[in-house]
Length: 304
Image (tube, rainbow, N blue to C red):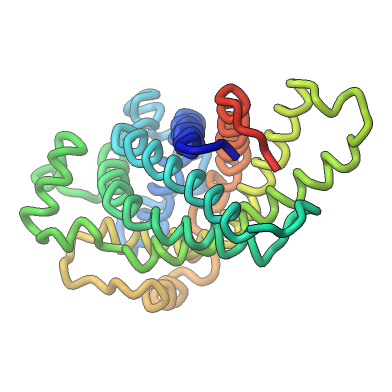
C-alpha cells in the first residue's frame, strides 16, 4: 500500500470518502437527529415517521433545512474519515505483517477498525455535538429562541463558554462505543463481501471493469453501512440525547440513558430514527466506499 511517504495517499482517499458521505447522507441524518430528539422527549411534537419529519422540514425551511449543521459535518467528516480510513489501512498492514494475503482475517480487521474508531471518536464528539445542536433548531424546535445558535462557530463558542472545554466533549463515551463497535461491524462486512464477490469474478473479463468495481463498492459499502447502523443505533440515540440536553447535570452514561429511554418509550425509543438511518446508511456508505476506492486507484494505491 504505497511506499515511503506514500501512506499519506490513504488519508487523502479517506478524506474524499468523508466528503461524499456528508453530501449524500446529511439530509437523512438531520431527520434522524430530529426523530431522536422529539420522539424520546416527554413533551413537544412527535413525528409519525421519517417521511413526516422530512416533509415538515421541507415545508417550513426548504432544502437548506435538511442541510442544517452541514458545515461542521463537512469539516468533521473530512478529517474523521481521513483518519479512519488511513489508520485502518495502516493498522491492517501492520497486523498482517508477513502473513499470506489469503483473504480477510477477523483478527486483523476487527482490532484495526476498533483502533481507528477509538481515535476518531475524539474528533467526532465535538463536531457532532455542534451538528446535533444545530440540527434540533428550526422546524418544530424544542429549543427556546433566546437559546438558539446563529452558526456552528457560535454554537461551539457558547458551549465552551457555558460548559467549559469539557462541555464540547459531552457524549464522548457514547461516541466511543458507537465508533468502535460500528467500524468493526462495517469493515468486517465490507471486507468479506468484497473478497467473496471478487473471488467469484476471478478469471472473468468483468473483474477489472470500472463500472463493475463501482457496483461492487456500492453493494459492499451499502450493506456494510446497514449492518453497522443496525448494530449501533441505540448508542447513537443515547449520544443525541446527551449532547442536545440543555442541562449540565444531565446523565452522560450511555447505558443509563438508554435504560431511561427504554422506560419512557420502550425498545422503539432506543431505535428512534431507525427508518431514515437505514435509508441513509446504504447510499451514504456506498458513496464513501466508491469515493475511497476510486481515490486510491487514482493515487496509485493497490488494494489487497
